[in-house]
Amino acid sequence: MLDSESNTQFNIIGSRKYDGILIIKRSNYHQEFNPNIEHPIFYSKYGESKTTLIGEGVSPKFHLDGNHISYYKPSIKKLIISKISIPQKTYEISTRDQVNPFFVPQIILKNKSIAYILNQNASGLSLVNLYDIAKNKKTTIYKANNYFNKLEMCLSKDRLIIFNGTHSESE
Image 1 (cartoon, rainbow, N blue to C red):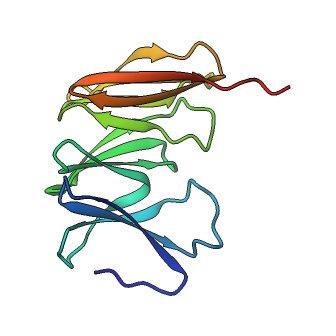
Image 2 (cartoon, rainbow, N blue to C red):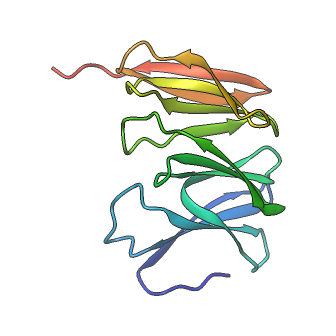
């Protein structure tokens, strides 16, 4: 499958639902502690030894029918959506407004043309954007009231659910 030099860690994200696995190759993992270091991300079907390099980034995730993958590239502050059957065809979504350098935006694809993105604005407040991939247009659909709000989101039967939790202020 994959071979590498010593001191390399392979993280695997698998899903039988999607009949595939994502493999993140982390070289010298015990020396690099920066969460923004981009690592090679590979795809392989279950039971096969052939791997395909999808790209380099962090936080990869399967979407829809398993033929779509997203990952984040902190170096250019963009979310990348890639189609496994056509890996060279990618969509890039800018997330440049965030102020926290360690914040990793989350993305959920509702379908092939609509995505929900959990991000931060230029003030550091969490927000959820509706992103039209075809039109390359973002619309804010929910914004946290203050910095102590922590947003989470999930999609259930085409319905977006947003959780708004509160961090307590330190005394």
